[in-house]
Figure 1 (cartoon, rainbow, N blue to C red):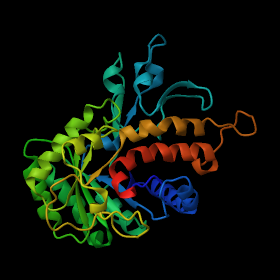
Figure 2: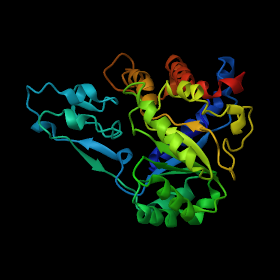
Figure 3: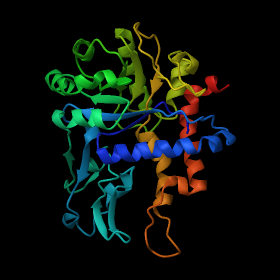
Figure 4: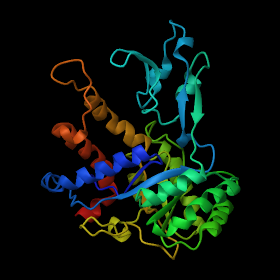
Length: 347
């Protein structure tokens, strides 16, 4: 309802189903959103699933045994966790440790642990498991996280997906910087071409750091410039370090496409926000928000989780749309990010 073009979720059937349910609910709230000035007309964003071809910070979770924590530990891990995923003696859940459902693998807890007992557990979907997931769940887009030097692994993953690639509306390749990155991306393109869908090169400038400070966006912008200079077919989208400062930085540098030039369907048209680009783009075509958006919205989600039913201590399984006040606070916050890149179009 805030105007996002694409919702990116984990390649997990339960997560995908939850996102699809949320998109359906959003359609029923279109009229209310318009009355509140958000410009949403019920046109759904693409639903994207993220896949990885190897070890990746986006596909891991922290873990530790809380019984090994000394009682006098100041617990810096609990304070530094941006997702409030680390708890000790949680009264409601009678639990200590990492809440797996909240942890998104940023890794900030690891170096601050005075006793070095925090580790991470990686999770990966096998190519054999991914293919039926793509074909059976009705998703619109796929994002593949890769790194320089993993061409063989990427090819194995792509071979599993490629029989169904024609049904996708969008393919995104997310890659952090590294020596030989441009040559690597060219090799990736040779593997996936030709494509019927739109193609995005997502520059992961400083993975999962957008909430640390304004300066993190500089790494994302610099990497975006590097990939733009390579003139690869497709679009370039920033990620990794993006925050509320990113769009202003892009505009100041003359690197941002106007929203109306991107073909975004905010007038109700149900078509791709990024049609296939046969010619390289000279500017940044989009911005992906991860860590910063999570931190921005987490206080509202925490309020929802802490709601009690009938003045008892029983935890409610509430949905955001069931709390009118929190719902529109959340949409307003999300809109504060999205509207920066689409303000010209909305006028």
